[in-house]
Image (cartoon, rainbow, N blue to C red; front, side, top):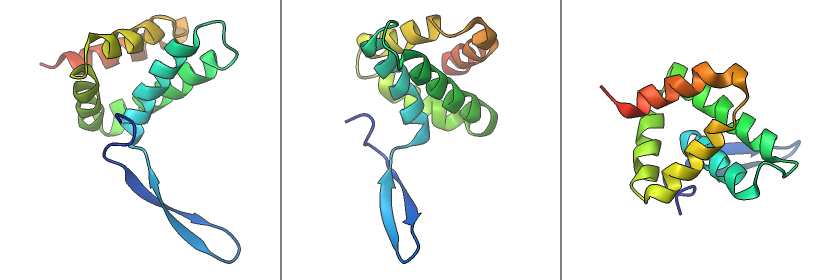
Length: 112
């Protein structure tokens, strides 16, 4: 439910047609990727890719739309402690090069 709430819309084009599609909210998708990474576990071949995608979307939102990221986080955290715990567990396994990004995210969601 979390991922499909508040979808956006996009257009897929091919040589002859266009199709309107619903897309997940990018802020929610980034946090969702971190949950998926946790569920798969660090030994899974896609774990690193999931964490990297989540971090890329978090980084984009911190630079351009932090309010959307905070809204997505607040909704996620409101669903129960397990949701937030899984995101933070994946962030704890992020490469050391992303420590600053993780710290900025934690500061942003902590609020003023």
